[in-house]
Amino acid sequence: EVVLTQSPGTLSLSPGERATLSCRTSQGVVSNYLAWYQQKPGQAPRLLIYGASSRATGIPDRFSGSGSGTDFTLTISRLEPEDFAVYYCQQYGSSPPYTFGQGTKLEIK
Amino acid sequence: QVELVESGGGVVHPGRSLRLSCVAAGFTFSTQAMYWVRQAPGKGLEWVAVISYDGTNTYYADSVKGRFTISRDNSKSTLYLQMNSLRDEDTAVYYCAKDEGYYGVWSGYLIYWGQGTLVTVSS
Image 1 (cartoon, rainbow over the protein chains, first blue to last red):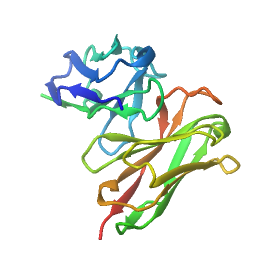
Image 2 (image 1 turned 90 degrees about the horizontal axis):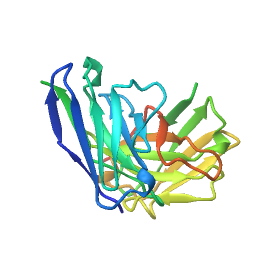
Image 3 (image 1 turned 90 degrees about the vertical axis):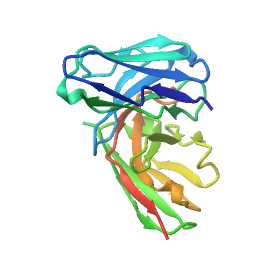
């Protein structure tokens, strides 16, 4: 099973700042099959990024994904108030089971 | 638009069984793989199971293998999760979610999610 480790656990920033979230996998991810999700309190997760760098439909371009192999990054260029949430990465390379990281909480400083 | 509505959650004693349902609408259910994902209170997401569009292929997380069974009824656009031998650690909100791929080619990422149903395992 591929283990995903996200860092930092909590990130405290102000609106307008740039956020950089990391996701490291225990094995190389096949074809960069890595997704990012956003979850706000009391809501279901929402897909942001798939294939490491492709934005899902309706996702603002301030969200971008990058990386390959075992190291992946989600960047939010300029934080909006609605971006403060918990973010999860998920790998879906090779066969299931697919796995999630433990999450990064992005909070207002 | 896509709608996924879970039901069947509740309070159950350890060792007992429960079946969750997820009714789908707004897309051709019979053409796409479906997932269950859970989230324990205050914790992160845990991938639970996936089923192929026609039900012939299923995969499970190690934590539920042998106890949980994912299935589907395409005539009713409904996904199921049969949970047996429940444990305290199975307490969570259970989400159903939809793949983006079609037929035998599934994407692996979860493009739409339901709002979840809470399962509490407690004596």
